[in-house]
Image 1: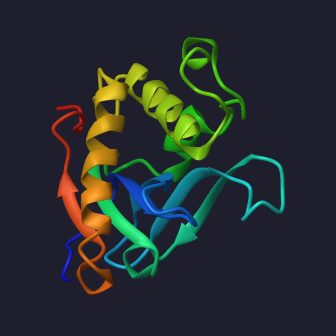
Image 2: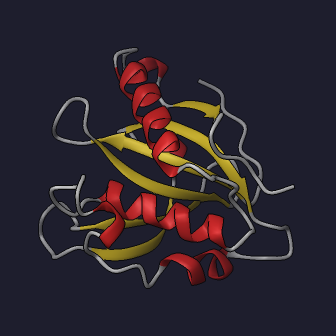
Length: 165
């Protein structure tokens, strides 16, 4: 499937996990058509405690990729370090506002707090309702997972998040 990625676009990237209907959640900052930066919380497949990671990633070619949903954009004069400044120090635990609804820390919990932090900056991602974005991404990605590997990943836009204008 042909996808068009523009430099400095910011995507929510959801990839398959070991459990059908459960996904790994990451922020994907586009460098070019093939490569970008994956910003996420990871345990490296359960080998390490939760930690923040920003790595080069060939997201569109990744065999487990399901959806890339456009949620924002980094100004052309800025780079990944500017985005990282808002997310790299997010604690690897459940923040107080989510403690009643989240039983444990996951990459999804980190993703939601990252989007809140980026939105609060007034730059890059305009997403006033992170819970609505979470529902939108989960619904869309769950449906797309059933399309079959030959039709994945799927690229789209969000009704709940967009670049600041």
